[in-house]
Image 1: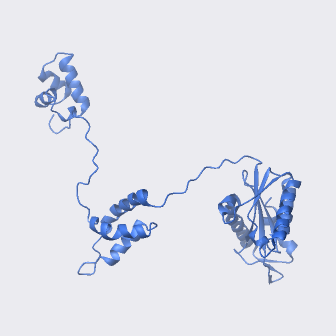
Image 2: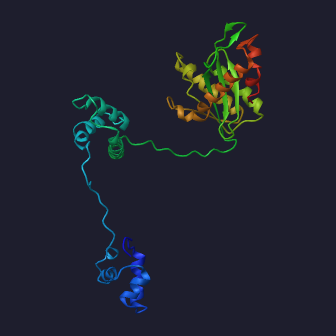
Image 3: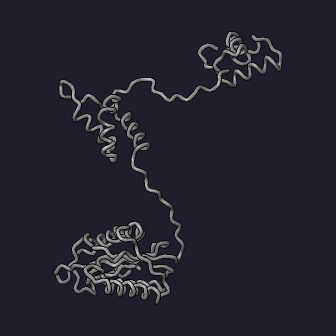
Length: 297
């Protein structure tokens, strides 16, 4: 019928009625809801439904308004600085390409085109993406230790500022955490005390214990002293039947399960301080035994 687009199913039905049911062109066309002329075109093999699928177009049908500036300016900018984003390049165009009235030549209408160009260029020429392998955590397999500064709020002891760190022990699988206040700074002794308190509170030990490179503890030490601390850490873990491991220097993501939880723990402590109504404690022990710290485990 006039105004309707004939699809391949209609063409197949028409030919089936003509060949198998031996209907006339008029009858087959009427049953298929097409014109007799369309039926004749189908039978002659000249109808669009008889043609093979068109080849995928890999060329542009019209010129983009940023094609020239892309070749002469934007693409060279990306070559020099592959991290540039499409939004940044769009702002550059609006600032530097103005008409006689001082208005941007390139309007918001070209932003999506620019995004496609940048995405395509980065896919073909940009920096390779890091390969990430999903980690499978096993119950009781690994625990992590790390030190972190608490800067969310100022803690005072009898109205005097108390500078301290937090030792953080965390089980990778269950996310169970233990927090201990450390006033002596990051050291092997602080790690030993914190780790043993955590294991006592836990009531057991995982198969593996991982900590960072302890660069702060090893700072300004001789090689002999560094070796002594390394052996001390190894002996401590072996005493609890744990395999001792350490991060590679500068690779914080290797301790990510505990690093990423620092913010949540410190935010919880800061919120509890607001509810408490005061950041002042009568003694360090009073601070250590305060609920949000003492009951973390």
